[in-house]
Length: 218
Image 1 (tube, rainbow, N blue to C red):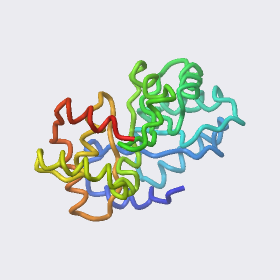
Image 2 (cartoon, rainbow, N blue to C red):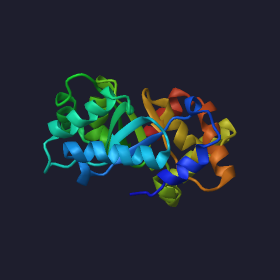
Image 3 (cartoon, rainbow, N blue to C red):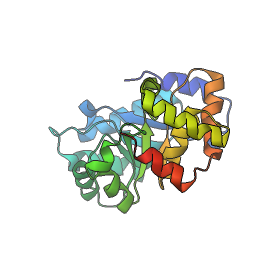
């Protein structure tokens, strides 16, 4: 869907494959057994690699039996074509159904929208389910596509905290996510300076009172 696999292949061609972690997804229209296998083979060809580190179901598809889909994912892992099995946008019930459908392996990740203003997964049981079952949460839109800074109350609060840490509000928002156990963030940026700023956020260790203060933002 993103049409980026060819670009990724070009970007990593001069690197040692063991130093690269590749994550990609499979579209819900391809959740039948043979379609899963074929889609993965096509991704491998576009990526010019022999394995995918993390292969994720992009969205739930309730019109296809999840057991059929997960059986194919396990086959791909058996064959060494993928290392980790992930899902995206699966709520607690859907995540549980996918987990129960697997016979030999476990779900490693669930990619979900999660940021200081979008905390729905904390209220519908998805966050707790993932934590209980050691499923890492990959937080997409960690800065709410920039809309985070359109909320004056939130921005002011983050600015006040950022001064204490010599950081930017964006870094504090990312640090809040990283404060959680088993949560990682995937901020998007095409600006080199912003990319470096995002990377540096991993070095910010929030104090408990600042984490709790941000957690109360709505």
